[in-house]
Image (cartoon, rainbow, N blue to C red):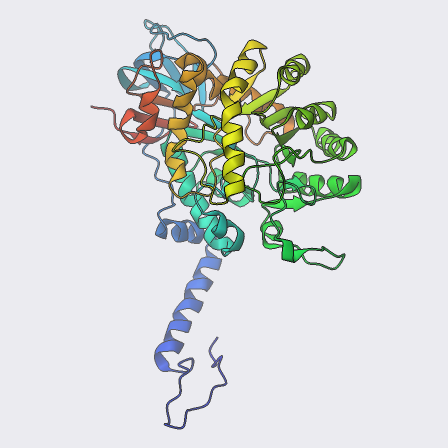
Length: 487
């Protein structure tokens, strides 16, 4: 670095446009080198933390238990994420990152730190079972063309916002979220727990094939496109390729595998009614996942695609708004999960500029109401997700979209879909689950993820639309990351 990096010579006027050898430039180089040496000496972790702090991404926990003293939440109304009723006869006792007991009101431990909830509702931390950490806060054009460093920094910012909306856990069903997850778990960045799928596995011309027509044909020596290089998607045709791409995501740390089994709204070249992947290809992904003790979830809307996925061993259907009654009955009989979103083509819909995508979006919206009705009628296990994509402002609707479920069911039933039910869906990851402990429930032994809210979950969920004011306390793993309770 101490020598000039430019071979430019002075211009005819005696002016050298390159300042690489100038004294002020060399001085800056020496400062950078010294700083890099110091950072390497410190092991890197503190340096990374400082870098992210400069972008407003560093964690800022407000408090945790005093060592040796448990934490007791008192004067509360409890929705435990399991039973569809509120309780006011217990407190919540937390030690470390766990809920250790729900003692009765007259069983208060003498040495506990006390948080007085002032009669407010306490609910489990929310779970978004269909989230894209690296795609939610940027435009589709940015996702396809921007520098990957920018995408990851934007994802880090969105992760902090996600946690502040009360979503303490997300199941990431497509995108390069492994690094973000690691940064959050190590305390470098504030954000939710992440159950990552890694790259979405797609056939050529499938919903995860983001290439443009001019990029075809793909020959043996053709390099991967940016979306594949960045880890957003992986194109795989045939059993051997599907096995390879599935195993790559498992190697990276996927807690479940995501495949594309049908057409989508945001993709330009696959019709919504297209059935994607042959059964033997899907079975290859399922077998590879099962060998690692986990499962496959599938993006698909139509009856044919859903039924093919179920026959192949897929355990969770993502979307499925165009399912007919026979298909929903099949889902129920096989115990397949339905990860469903309130797609209603309203003000919170993912932005679509292409007329064909807009038409597909309206078609899905028309099936949404009937899908909720059929799922409830046949007792399909259902979990809430948003699938917010390609919008810097879209993330703000995350809680509001959960509140919309109250038009299809009672508020507590809707809340259950984003707590206890979603936690059970996460449990399908088995040994590949990245966090040891139950999520989505306030019960003995569960991870201490919970919210203290201004609002009555029994009557409505409108308070979810204003998390800054309504979420008075947010706790993740026994650590308070937000506290605005009056003292």
